[in-house]
Length: 184
Image (cartoon, rainbow, N blue to C red; front, side):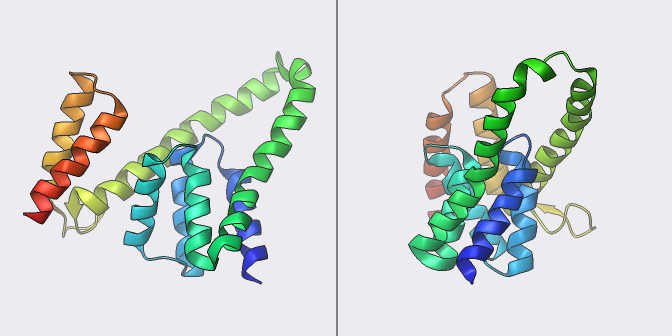
């Protein structure tokens, strides 16, 4: 049954997605490829839309993927699956917080997880770069730059770093640049 499969898949992703949004992109990508739910481009589009909509990227992506795969009930199943592990962990953690606050064991585990989170975020950067700034594979010799995507990347990087524009404005500007550079 697809609803149970979505619930369990997103429960597993929610359980393993320590670090939030961008960290779960490799997990989502792997599950989507394994289940043949979406194409790579559809997945990239869903993640992009998830970033622009209010709320956590993981929950938004789960909802969109669930709806795209199995309708409204699929979206509900995927969303519940994604939320449930966090809900369970927050309840347990809140109850045990004082006991683990000073634990060197817990602190050591968290210090070990941090570099893995950075690696997973780097994977997300590579994934999106291969969808928008480069063509070909980042790990093969057939790599080439996608000039229009690179221009949008550079403009938004400069505007956010130097001018410190708001992320919403950056998204609006990038959408406008996309229309200008890809449509006309």
